[in-house]
Length: 195
Image (cartoon, rainbow, N blue to C red; front, side, top):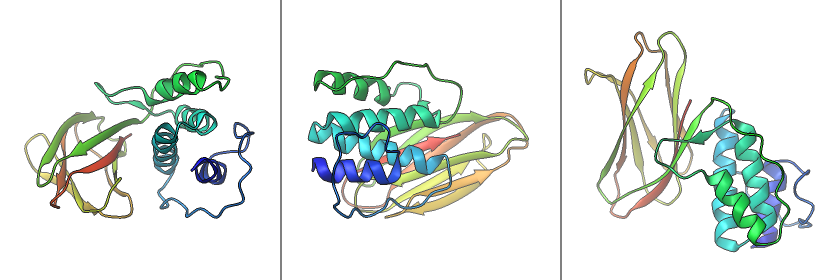
């Protein structure tokens, strides 16, 4: 597992942090998503796998990639980069100095039960491109729906094996409703990214 995580991190991230990885094993690439979402999806995937495997080097790589993307946790969600750096330190890996975050995308690492809906609200500025991206982390189908404050639909997309994005330019600065609907009979973990 360590070799698989290291190879994935080296292929997607960068070779600087990955001095402990010496694998030549082939790894299937993550689905392609426009930057910066692809980088955030890769960091979340690598970090959660590394956390489960207790792989300190891959945890540091994922934390660095997540911080470099500029993404920050959505309100109420854990700061995964900080958690992964702390866990890597517990595993004896050297933690790079913290630089602090700048404003940028937010990510959510959630789970939606069978047939259930996760409802979120987020505000976007008028006249600026807005984007919400969703990736299912398990088998099944999730529906991403975006609605204006008055309930008018803005975008709808289905996420199965590849990430999906909804993009639009709001006319007014206002909150939007983001729905993640589980269309299957089992719970599905997911990543949600807002710009």
